[in-house]
Image (cartoon, rainbow, N blue to C red):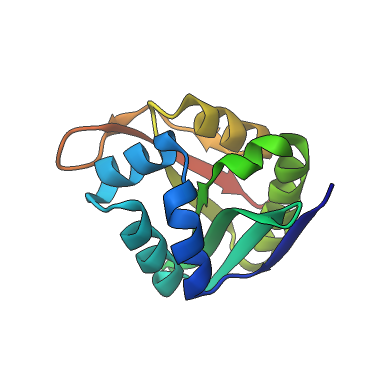
Length: 153
């Protein structure tokens, strides 16, 4: 069993979109009103870098990062996952911890918006090392989201 991280491409977005977990879809619909493919394509396009995560040869996730405040050196991270990630959750967690440590060499702070209903994502980001602010209405529909932050030590 293996987990591989590689640069993401448009074809990865098309492949992952129908495989997204229901909670990932609900999150992007609540935050931006997008379907899975639109969310993946827009996120990859707006990212400084985006990566695909293969689990035993099957696409399991796409994640990326970008500056949200260049002057304050703040980077935003995002991740959308498919069911394949459930086969290797510990390996994915360790990989995410490593990636965030590497990103903190570039950015002074990382942020992410997490749908408060998506308890698995809240727990995952917390385990990676993010601090969760209390959930507040973020999207036009009033869905509650946490601002997750991680700072360079």
